[in-house]
Image (cartoon, rainbow over all chains, first blue to last red; front, side):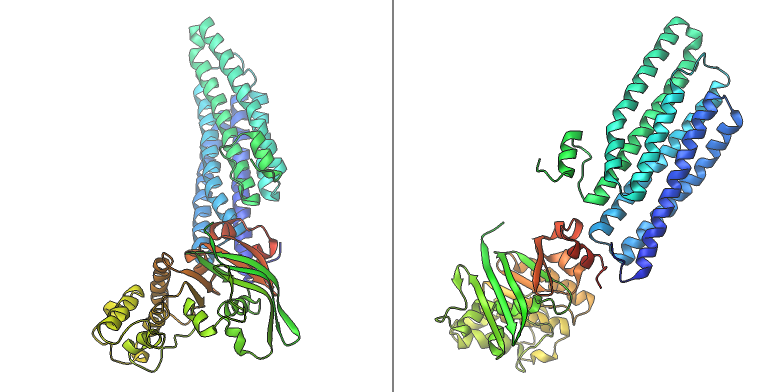
Amino acid sequence: MPQHTIKRFDEELHILKELVLSMGGLVERAIGHAVKSMLEQDKKLANKTINRDKAINALEVQCDEMTRDILVRRQPAAGDLRFIMGIIKLVTDLERMGDLAAGIAEGTLRSLEYPPKNFSNLDIMGEKVQKQINRTLDALSRGDIKLAMTVIEKDAGIDVLYKRMYREMLTYMMEDPRDITASIILSNVAKNLERISDHATNIAEMVIYIERGHDIRHVDHEAAAKLLSGEEI
Amino acid sequence: MNTPKVSIRDLRLWYGESEALHGINVEFAEKRVTALIGPSGCGKSTLLRCLNRMNDRIAACRIEGRILLDGDDIYAPEVDVVQLRTHVGMVFQKPNPFPKSIYENVAYAPRIHGLADKGAEMDELVETALRRASIWDEVKDKLHSPGTALSGGQQQRLCIARTIAVKPNVILMDEPCSALDPIATAKIEELIDELKQEFTIIMVTHSMQQAARISDQTAFFYMGDLIEFGKTGRIFTQPEKQQTEDYITGRFG
């Protein structure tokens, strides 16, 4: 795409995108650390993760200030407008993902008193969710709607993993009431991961809106794919 | 879409040897505001001026194609241009009231067209036009002072009153706010929003924000071609053509 006649506008959009991507990078790392802290029962790492959430929150505020400034000064239209609108929305998702990661780290701290017998598929689920975030941020960075669609499609798999883990935790609780606390903590952690993946999906939907102008938030996958291929639905 | 008020079919226009419009096809809906946008020299004002045959006055100007007003060709030989211009009024970039009183500015055209008798009937016509142009309250106590003594924004609303006094169907506006301050501009925009209940309005504007604010449909022109035409909301959020996108996002040349 050619540059704006006003070069400063290009710079502002570039800076904003970098800011959002670095916020995404922090979120991605926070989730990795949170899950690791649980799996390794690492108190220090859990505390670090909780503390670092402040940086993510601060970036959200900074992004909001920038988008507000661009709206009022540049009155963006078309693709620029969709980019700004998309950023306003997806920054909220990123911030929530950060909170959920901090929530997992808090689960770690609680679980130190009630050590779980085993972590079920938490490692796999953690990896898959991280991969989702990684794809989402790549899709945003490159404007890759194919990759964004992949994120949306793969969310169902994360839901299945969560349900499986939840059922497994139920069986531990039934077998031995002393495991109830640990099992609830773990199942909450899995729930957080499942919700993080939902937020990644929201961001992927925003990427599609930014790039193509289609709002696919409340349409099913098939219809969304048709829409993107240019067919009428 | 409403019924088309004005239809343009394969319109080509030359100034001497150079072709300024390369075959334009477009329909302007009745009682809607259509904004014509595009960089200087793209042909939007030329097109606007074809709609009430203002280009007739330019000797080197030649056109091909058809322009239909309610289905009738406005370039047909039997058409009386003076009569045509009562149906298709025009408001210009710079307010240009006659050097006469406010009352006379509005009454002049209805009188020569015999639309109202002197006295009470004309008084009523003048008042109605001034009210519909949202300027009555500001001028009702000085109807006989010169129109040129009003502020720029008031002069422009007076010109709009003058235009609507002859009860046109279509009002053409050529950058009607470019010489006005933001408050006067807002008043004209508010007025345009009211006038579209009765008139079909086609306006050229260089302010993309203005097009986005007040038009229902937007047509983007570039180098004598109509590049894209559609609902304003869509044009400004999701244009189909890259050239439109580049222009409205400020990435042009």
